[in-house]
Structure formats: C-alpha cells, structure tokens
Image 1 (cartoon, helix red, strand yellow):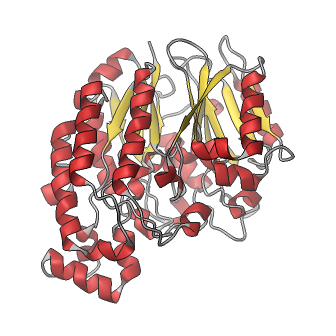
Image 2 (cartoon, rainbow, N blue to C red; image 1 turned 180 degrees about the vertical axis):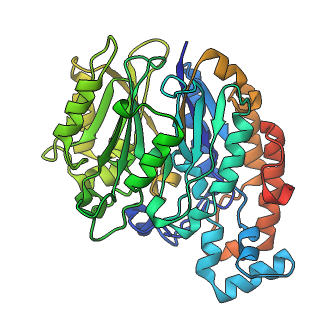
Length: 444
C-alpha cells in the first residue's frame, strides 16, 4: 500500500530572527526579536507526534550545523573557531547571521521528491534544492543531500541527484513550489511545478524576487524521468509574489485529488484546471477548492498562512487540514475553513490546529516544516529505520531538545563560541539517535 509520509525537519539550536529573506514579510516584521529555540523545536515535535498518533508515517530530518564555520573559512576567515566567530562578528555581522540561520527547518525547501509511480525507472527520486536566491540558504544543499542520502539509502529504491547549478537561471527552492495530484498515492500522478521567473515574454514581479525559475523546474522533471504529458510548469501570479508569496506553498496546497488555492495564486488558473482535468486518471475526480479574494485577501492568506497548511489522509478516511493557530485567530480565515469543512462536495472532514508561533514568526507554517514522500511498503521498509518517529523516539528527542537547546537567543549570541560547542554536541548526539552517520562537516 502506498502512503504519503511526512519527514519534518527539527528546528536547530540557533533558531533566531535575523530577517534575512527578502520578500518574506513575517521574517522581516519579526527581525531582531528574541527567539526561543527550545520552544520552536518542541512545537515542531508536538506536530510530528500528533500526526504519527493518527496513523500517518512520520519521519524526522536533522537540522544543519550552525554557525557554519566551514563556510566562513571558505570565505577567507582563518584561525581557531573562536577567533573566526569573533572576527566575523566585528567585521561582518550580517554574514555571521547568514551562516547562523536555522532556515533548514523549512524542510519543504530541502529538495524535490518524485515517487516511484511517476518515474520511468520506478524509483523515488530526490534532488536537493540549490537555494541560491539567498546567501543564508545557499549553504544548505550539500548537507541536505547527505542527509537525504543517509535517510533514503537503498539504491534499489531511491535515486539521488546533485543540486542544480547554483546560478540565477537555475534557481530552485524545492518542494515548496512542487505539488503532486493523484487519485490514489500508488497510481501515476500529475506533477505540478510552479515558477515565478520564466521566459522574457512572461511577466515577473517588480518588488520582490522570484525565487523559482522555469528552467529549474524543467531540469528537475528531466532528472526525475517524469512523463512530459503528466508534468506541468505553471507560472505563479507575479502580483502575489510582490504581496509576500515567496513560495507557491504560501498561496496553494495540493494533496491526492484536492487542489486548495487562492483565486489570485496562478497566472492562468483556467489553463491549469483544464490541463488537470484533461490528463486526470483514476477513480476519484479532481477537486478544485478556490478561495475567492472577496472572502480572504492575499494579505490575510500571507499573515495567517492558510495555504501553508498540510492536507493529510489519515488511515481512517477523510482528509484533514493541518493549520497554525494564526488561522483560528483571523475571523475571515477561520470562517473560510469552516465553510470548506461544511461543504460535502469535497473530502475535507476535520481541521487540526497547532501552535507553531516560533516558526510562524520566521515566515513558515505547517507545510514549510515537512517534506512529503510517497512510499510503497517495500520503500518504507528500506528507509533508515531510526529516521521514523515512534513514541519512544519522540520521547528521546524531546529530552534531547530540553538538554541541549537554549530558551532565549538574540543576535549577539551568535558570536558566542559556547553556542557553537553546544550545537555541535547536540548534533553529534542527534546523528546517533537517528542513526545517520557523519553527515556534518565537523564530523568528517
């Protein structure tokens, strides 16, 4: 039986609010506020445990090593670690913030995944995102690739590709701009790639950068050996990028036969819907849930992260919507959710609300925190067994967070060499808990 698994990223020990991502309005709004790494990690673990408890396969992916002293050495800083941190904090505090970012918590950006039902060779394909649009994220792909390869090891079932060349023409932000639709998880699906920058004749945003290119989407489809007739490259509405929709998963979410999206999400919604209907195969018909701008504005969608929800299919049937508590606090957004649940023409049956304020303040909700991987029973058995969440492993990870994470962090703390030591000690222990081997630079 094919099921969609969620692999959530653990929030790292240096979780902070530096406001590094241009176009991410929440991150900019909360820049320089104190953060609570311990609370952030525990909030994420609580969501993982809740989804595990309703019967979904739930995996865990580790955070990256931060501060990234290896990156600073590549940029010309030398000496022992303490001297490197001291010098960069005095000379280039912005660079220190970039190499200390805990942005790998947004696991939806770790890479793009295509299930074996869609690929020519019948394997699950992974390509880590190059994340070259922002300096602080551009340091992630190498470690992301090692983590994915350590988690999904067996070459009989899993194919791993290098990140695309880190150039603006191939800018790739991973699964945050990729959606798969299908009748059943084990059947061949439709793979939808959404981009903000295409050819010279296509419109582009004018205020904020478009982080995903059509050329990158096309390269991913070739690498993953996807059928061209079941793959679509869809232009995002440039106006919503300028309104703070820096990834497609801030304005649309899809799961199985359901596509939930804002009226202003895409440049050619009619063309997209026609393509889905024309190419659709299977017993279930596609369900389009369009939220009108008159009921929920783009600004409300961005501030609540309504579309950055998770759509999940529990074993007991129905489809659940997993949202952040900010959705419940905005009357028009909450009313829209209730209207969706009351409409018997769609499979949505329940909403689950989670407190994810620590991550929401940095511009990411439930969907940002997870990478979706559809797996057969044999493929699930081939995953590194310690990467799966169990009640025992959840308890061990909660204890690990409480032992190693600080409950308050401000930007000046990033220069503290003790924070680097604490982080490395924590991550070294985490690789033992998760059985990943030496995935970090300091371990190699």
